[in-house]
Amino acid sequence: MTEVPNTLLGKVMTVLNAFGADDDELGFAELGRRTGLSKATLHRLLGDLAEVRLLDRGTRGYRLGGHLFQLGIRASVERRLVEVSTPYLEDLYERTHETVHLGISEGHDVLYVAKIGGHRQTPTPSRLGGRMPLHASAIGKALLAHSPAALRTAVLSAPLERRTPRTIATPGMLRRQLATIRETGVAYEFEESRIGLCCVASPVLGHDGEVVAAVSVAGPTTRFDPRAHAASVHAAATGIALTLIRRASLTSAH
Amino acid sequence: MTEVPNTLLGKVMTVLNAFGADDDELGFAELGRRTGLSKATLHRLLGDLAEVRLLDRGTRGYRLGGHLFQLGIRASVERRLVEVSTPYLEDLYERTHETVHLGISEGHDVLYVAKIGGHRQTPTPSRLGGRMPLHASAIGKALLAHSPAALRTAVLSAPLERRTPRTIATPGMLRRQLATIRETGVAYEFEESRIGLCCVASPVLGHDGEVVAAVSVAGPTTRFDPRAHAASVHAAATGIALTLIRRASLTSAH
DNA sequence: CCACCGAGTTCCGCTGACCGGAACTCTGCG
DNA sequence: CGCAGAGTTCCGGTCAGCGGAACTCGGTGG
Picture 1 (cartoon, rainbow over the protein chains, first blue to last red):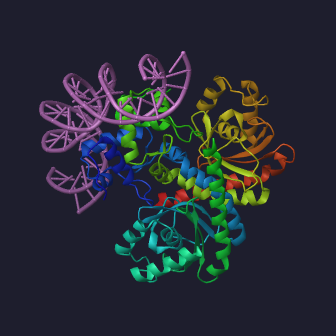
Picture 2: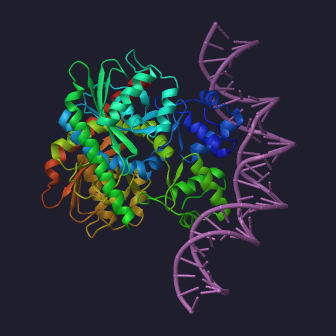
Picture 3: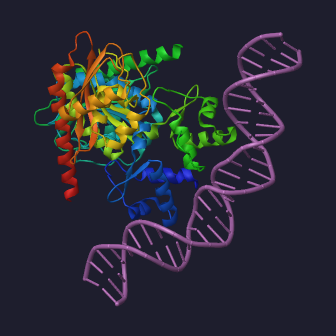
């Protein structure tokens, strides 16, 4: 865990971060366990957070509140990314009719920030707001390959968690793949995050080459050939990148 | 403004709420003006907020932080709504090729929570996370018509802000429209939020008739006939409602 | 060159908001 | 009935947070 200063804000963040991507509602006791706060403190804090709607009271506990959603959707950098990307993701979906993702890098994980997949989408291990280790998915590898060296060595020197038997779990193998990805701008994944699932991904690069996000298309191993869609994914990622840069230069001009 | 208790959390919310949907970055002084906090307090608070990434430091000030985005995307109720709705919105977009919106009711405003519109989308006055008075748009009227009587009377008795010359600004007229909408389940708008723009909207109702959200399709007055798409919009809204209810009964079963 | 202004930062002593241990209520369960 | 786990309330001590004031810094104009 990260070092949490003993301040109100620190406690607030501890509570909010106690909610994982898959948690719907958490009860008082569960939150107590996860945060390590004393009952009295936690009780008061939860009450206060609910009052400002950073948390909502549910039937069986608390959940992240509507106000949080409202604020989050306004976070300008990410919103801009989502707004700009959406049309390209739609295109990509219309072309492939497979599940399309947009993810950003957050710590040693991918954070999924957008997803388009139609009604009969192939089950992916991703949820909006969900996470996946960087090394265990196409989108993650695309991000990682173009990340600063510091992050890459950090990930490579930490143990590589296996999500499936096919997850790349040896640093050497991963390092070689990343080199290839950095050259080609395309990352593949064959059942590395979930059995039965294949992906292609491509990075969205900013105006001085730093990686901003990555786009991927995922489909079932049986009928989906990632290579067939590499060009489309790459084109979408490039399109997003160009639009972002154009927008940025417009606003900073004034 | 709402009464803000003199507590840290209260100040935090004051600061975060100082950011409007259109604000990108706000400077120290501007935040001081909007929040009314003393310089010393504000300075410390901003530093702390930046440290936990509820705010990010930009080149010319502060903006809502990445952590906020991450938490917001996890707020379960809204995330579920977005996840369930997306496929239906995609359908609607593929069918109409016009800008599609999803909005929820928040105070006396619509809050736009999703938007699909392709590259050449017609300019709408909405942004993701943006707001619009309930009475001044199709999506707002759809929400309002199915809202609890208390909200309706509150909106009807407050002055109805004009966004264009065609905005419905007389309570009588609005009340009559709302009655019709409640019967038909379809709301129209003709240049009431923005000149040149027409909309159709339909409410997404929960399992005991309460309104959860609303869907709309918007297009330019010149080539867009809202009536032509009423059925599609209504179908999408109903589809979302059914899926939401099905999901809810599944989780509450266990 | 200085005087002025607005933006942002630092200092410091006072104080009440926040802390957490402990005692309490309220369930459901065997 | 007694116990265990969830959640709530009480209360005195203390330190995090408060804000006035004095400061730096960069720009502007007289």
